[in-house]
Amino acid sequence: MFADMTAQKDPIQSFYEKYPHPDPMKELPAQVLSGEARLEGCPSWCFHVYWPLRKFADELDVLIAGCGTSQAGIYGASLPQARITAIDVSADSLAHSTALCLRHGLQNVTHKQMGLEDVGGLGKFDLVICTGVLHHLDDPDAGLRALRTVVRPEGSLNLMLYAKYGRAGIYNMQEMVRRIGVTAATSTDADLEAIRAVVRSLPAEHPLAGKVAMLPEINTRGGASDLFLNPRDRAYTVPDVYALLARTGLVLQEWYGRAHYEPSCQGMKGPLAARAEQLPVAERYAVGELFSTRILRHRFVACRDDRPPETYGLTPDRPDWQSLIPIRHRSAQFDRTNQPPGRSPWVVLQHFRQDGIRINFEPAEGTLLERIDGQRTIAEVHGGTVPETARAYWQKLFRYDLCWFRMATG
Ligand SMILES: C[S@@+](CC[C@H](N)C(=O)[O-])C[C@H]1O[C@@H](n2cnc3c(N)ncnc32)[C@H](O)[C@@H]1O
Image (cartoon, rainbow, N blue to C red):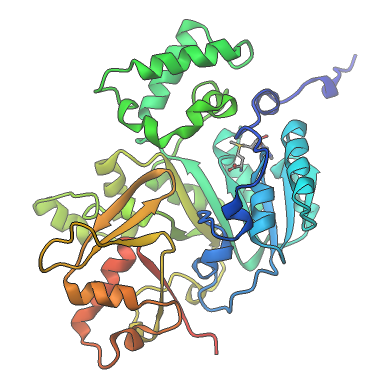
């Protein structure tokens, strides 16, 4: 006798059919359609994070693995020349995503219902986007290995994985809810509202209490169930991320939200903070994550471990640092109110659904920051000879996530 395999759905597929995530958007926001939106990781504005030696071009082959309901539409609208393949296991999510693309007349997105483990035959891509998916798989390593096979040699992956320490309070809640007897399979909308009521009543010392504002998805059906009822959910530390990439033939190309990982930017003080400053980046970020405990998601760019290292990761540590072209983070804004005497205006950097940073500089340094236009080299921004001592300033801008660098493309 043979079992009817078609009747057996993966629990994660059943989950996303019950709770498409995020809840389907009726329309794309106007800022996305006008190109104004700052979508973390979208090459429409941070192309050079992926390819700092290339001229901007959005004629890219892009795979969105686990597209959910709205990501393909957002990328389709933001990158009109790109050829986008959007895949998902959930028929419901794909139906929403297809409807969204149709409603906005997007011709550049092709949808396919399939698991990302089977992408082998889909061709090759410049960019693979996989956010919020791998940590729900039975075998994330196998999933990431499969994605690696479709990345072009000089391509990149834009990934997001849950972060372990920042989510500690969510895991407390998941276990509490499970013990009370609420499960994804049986829960109703009333159960989700009951979970929200518990969250509202958490004691101030609870590790989730101070983070609710960073979790707006709690208010949607799909978002709340993803937070508290997802049947498979694992989280990673910074060393776990590096280890996962090493196991799957990839390397870390760039972190998004670097300021959150920098111990000094998080306000760590004293002799140990000074020692942490000297650590290599992977160790320093591990320390920063342990100190902050506020990182909920790791957003980062990876590439194949055989991609030539000189094609990415440009920082002012290089000997030719003065010829780098700084690009200011599009979310970095100047706030000229309450400017302290003898200091530059405040620089405010909003981060995707996390606390932003707010710092100021020596007045001359503030002027340099304002002169960054994405076209001038560091030498040109200074308008003359650049002393070697200025290198530390540019390193700080990079570490605090206020800018990244490209090379002139001729
Ligand atoms: C939390 S949602 C993330 C959606 C989207 N990537 C985003 O960031 O908004 C996870 C999505 O991954 C899909 N998914 C889960 N397992 C998958 C798999 N093995 N292959 C492809 N998609 C999968 C789910 O159906 C769901 O739509």
